[in-house]
Length: 296
Ligand code: NAI
Image (cartoon, rainbow, N blue to C red; front, side, top):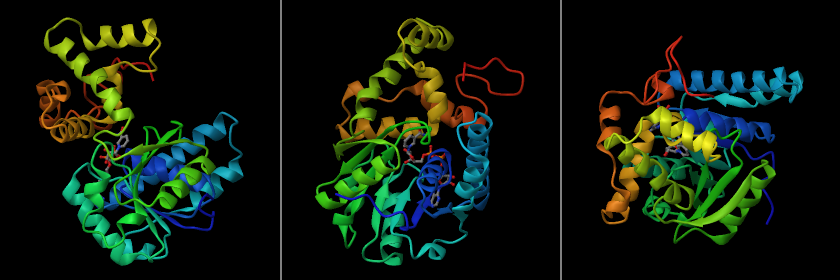
């Protein structure tokens, strides 16, 4: 199966951590990318984030300046979805909420051409459920990037019950053409990685609840002693507690409240307090200027 042609325009909805990273990846692969968010200021900061990442690559000598400028020029901020009617692939990276995502996909299906492919970057929600109510559910799949999208190689291509095999294969080939390592997955709660990773967070939160070890200690043990790239607390701070808590709840509920996947009150309290991790400047660690941070 062939990857989408570079002249296919990509619409990314949600310009937060994931959407801006996905826009970066698609633009770097040569596509024109429309970037939309319900909050216009998020599109601005998403574009600024892409620019910052590109500047870093130029400074490290990994990307020529002219190419960085060309990539940034391919990312077109849009103030309304109907400015992106000619997109052939729409990738959604908005809030992890089934109802909100379903409503968006119904709008997208009405707006875009019949040949367009619709994809969700959801971490955990059912692709089958999200496609219900669409006129062309066969052209809908999960396209699950990992954080940060420009740096993480893996992409899960998630098929729901109605996803056509040719669509999953096209997305697989496209992710590979974008320099990623794609894997096919099925629409099960958390798919592959987020299912296997749940205990990494859940057990660490239980250790903390029992006061068996502090976040700094456990992160250092797992990172330096066991070879994990990041400890569980610094990783949750990177993901964002709002996102991680929503994913945990969704997997827990989808497995009919299986206690193995139970959410943590500690994380719920962080969400209530707005301590969402790096993005809000405070989570398990303090990211304010001059504070002691976990290693980058
Ligand atoms: P984020 O909170 O950084 O960004 C979400 C953006 O979506 C915000 O800018 C918000 O204004 C916008 N938004 C919310 N509802 C909208 C709507 N109805 N229409 C248009 N824009 C809307 O969230 P993040 O971390 O980028 O996550 C987005 C999605 O990606 C979620 O489904 C999440 O589960 C998934 N994901 C997150 C990962 C992570 O590590 N944070 C990793 C992989 C997937």
